Image (cartoon, rainbow, N blue to C red; front, side):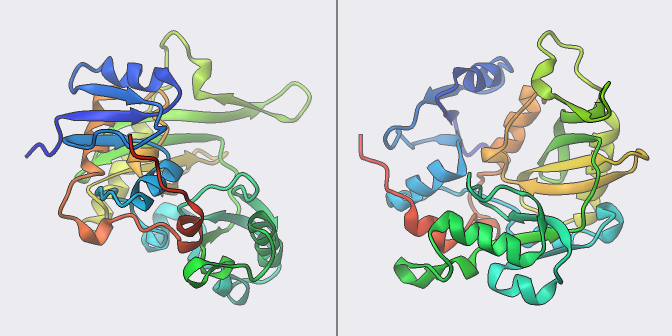
Length: 291
């Protein structure tokens, strides 16, 4: 059953809507998102921060996501490392002062980027500084300690891929970064936009691995989402993270398959998979003005 008759891209970058429209499978519209768009019959591609502003405006929309704890439920054979998910106030007690990878699970903040940190305290201090000071409380008692975060052992990914999934099937995939040795010893990063005239890297193996993961997760996955996977120096695949398809960069993934996943990531009737922003982020978001 089709729940939407068009997809609205909320972005100041016109290429996203233009590229999705090139699939010629679904009506694509575009807006820069300065106010609340007409919502009747539309699915959305937008940033998480804009989605929060829409919800803060009192508009409901079935944004779906895997949730902040989903990665820790993925079988270890697909992760190839230890992964922990929880809130910041539980992080320090769960892990010692060792260098590891840290990230806010479902949010992005320019002053608290995902990446290696020298132990939980260092990550906590960075996040606290990003929001003002440790122990900061906002409306409704929302504090830094309630933010969801992900800890994982460090991995040396050489290639990373984004795979779009709809109802348990991989519908599109794109390599988005690869790291190769440079002439001076340091790695050189080649990103997805280096391929401007086709000739995109093959994604068949990455898509097949992502399909194995989706098959293993069974009912424990949202109807639509994106799954990032990567290979290490030995060529072994592992899951990096899951993201909400409706806010995921599309890179060079085949557009028709991307649209299929985007629509699935906003199907009504899946309340268990509704995206629930962390309260601190939500309390700081501002409603969109009415048109």
